[in-house]
Length: 588
Image (cartoon, rainbow, N blue to C red; front, side):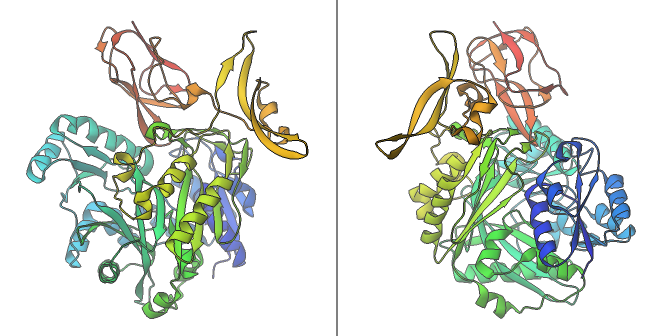
């Protein structure tokens, strides 16, 4: 086994790996950007080394800086987590060249399966059919149009070297092809460092089912179990569960066997996830993620296996040590995971909400687990993924797990940033969730989030001109405790600290969508960087028309006008960094 592991990542996955290493008696090394100097993963590791920079490209995607940290620390293994370099064959080779072991598959397997185009070809050779798509990168929007006219609209444009919904755009018609392709390429470069994208048929009402697999260098490969990841927004997962509900056993076994065949086809080693779309009794190969998944804890809870520990053992050359029958015997009960992202789900917009977490209280109790990368006082940066924590519960059956998750969500307190918790509560309370009547498009097409707010607060100005905020406070009347809402003077952060007994609130403006406030000033609702300007001064615009595109937390957000008018003044250009409330254009 290894003596010292460097985690080339940040956030909750870095914390997750550090904890397992500590249990195995392995020393840990953290790396960090300037913005993460005091982050939780840095505080927990045995050693930590600065990568410099702020953005991912300047830090966690800076290969020379990570190699220097490996040399200085003497780490004999590198765990890449997920995202960043986790599916980068050149980084894996560089780690090996530095004398350390890459905790992941061989570079050759990463190249075959990490590239979504070559992975389709490998799956076909293994006898596993994929979603109709093209096996070469796109070079011109005309190719998207031709594909759509041949296979029908809509069409999905996807990052060839990505996953997790990053760099994916859905094109409903030929008129959208050019802008969607450019947007997908920008996101692909921002998150994976590669611009290649390819088209794929977008199925009408599929479920996203993925299979956890493991393989070792001794020729053993097996499937651990499936996860249903169909509850998504912007093609990124919100809720995951295992096992998949209302899912035939014969399909489960066939999918598992297909996943193992794909592993053998590319000489795979380590942890991997083979993803499928399932519709009308048939499943189609989607892609293989050559790494640990964000949602791996639900598999851990239903099998009792520590997948990070298994990763480390396999990377050290040990056999998996389990048979397919033994894995099947371990599966028990039902697990659900909710991703707590720093996003405001009000009205279904899911707007990024970077900022300082003034207070964080995770849930507890039987069958309840929290994997978090933040604590009270930490800051969620606009430059990185906005995952704050994952809440995972286990129950004897799906209904017990569902009720346990609702209890855990109600216990969770995250203040200072908006989170997706209200959306999770709406999802798990819905009759469609209970009936497992869902698809990857259910959240955006069927779930009504019009009444959802990230917090119950608002801000007002009193008759005396004093700014007041609506806060929940505790009071006792005749010895009985009550929680009441009061309009109180806004005293700033000191009044909203946990010690004050009051809970900080978010203004109405901060919770609003990326549109103008009706006064002619088009503003942005969050920190971010302008990546594209869609209009020029003097242009006439309609209500809802996109003025510019703001990138925040690796997601592109259209900034729209909420009224018709003429662009009197344009205040931004591509590359400008903005803060919440900054004006991008003035309409007249």
